[in-house]
Length: 435
Figure 1 (cartoon, rainbow, N blue to C red):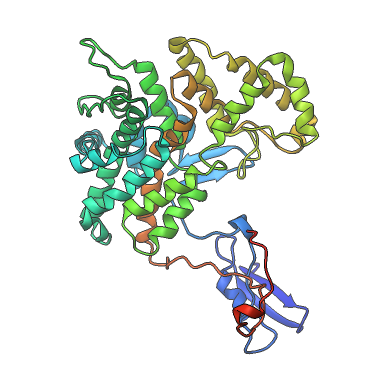
Figure 2: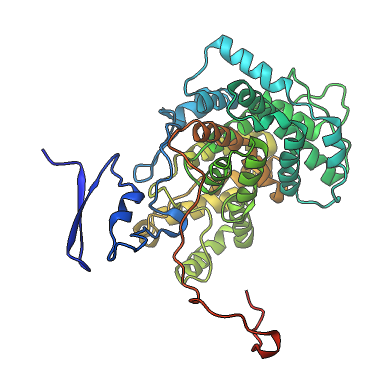
């Protein structure tokens, strides 16, 4: 039987090293024994963007990018999107198992009890400029919650942790809805805990005092499914940020504000907005061939295709594509859908894209749905954050309860100057201020 080890030979010294293999990985610290001189620091791995570095062991989300598989706690995303609700999936992600009916009822009740904001926080939201970006408001409000709940710093108490989970899941949609209403100059609509999670969110966004107002159940369910699809996705940029901040034992509010800030970046939470802008630029099916040629000449990028992890059709994209038609039956057809469908067909049958394994990802259709539902484009990352909050919290709990985890502290390869002496100001040469 083969040994679960890796043999490495350092050709600089001729020394041989045997490194243990666990879960098809080697521990980076085992490389430190490889050195030329005894006083050397030792070997490190260099991995920009952490493309092939595992920072944790997790039981939450499984992805097989080659086969297009996504599972939460072992359950296929297709089954959860079809049969579950977002709050049930949030329970699954955080606690590891699907709840019984009694557990689910209590869980939903506790989350919805925490949808109201402290009035001081509500007043703070009113101080933002009328044109403040809604994601900036969400990040600021989430961080500010840390000052309202100082007991949240006691992260080693399971009861305290649980209450912060209820609070964050309950209050984030209210903050998001208030940010939206603030932008358009409408008074805030306070939560209605008799409504479902996404139904209540849409109610806070849209209600204008109508006596017989009802949230469209198709749109509420569509948003619920979108939240499920965005709930977790392994160690992406924002999730890794949540874990890194949490490793310092920070409270979950400031940790999540950091995760939201990572999501705010256009390469992460802004991807579906980029897709929508691309479709608007193409404008018509007749313009697609010319745009495809520009992509091949590397003049522009084909947004919504390809993924850092998936080398097959993103399973979430298939679900969202079906969902789009249900939404359009309520909202009316989005004229960009024809462009998207034709663009997808061409890309899926063109050798250029097939050879590069560029298949549609979750962002390709989600922006079209959000636009059809009336959301402005700069609100898209807020919607992403509301769904991803469940995964961030699950990852937070796993991070702080894992005895192997330590404060995050990546190494660097120093390439700067060697030691040099201070030069008086009148003897220095001018240096351009270029960053």
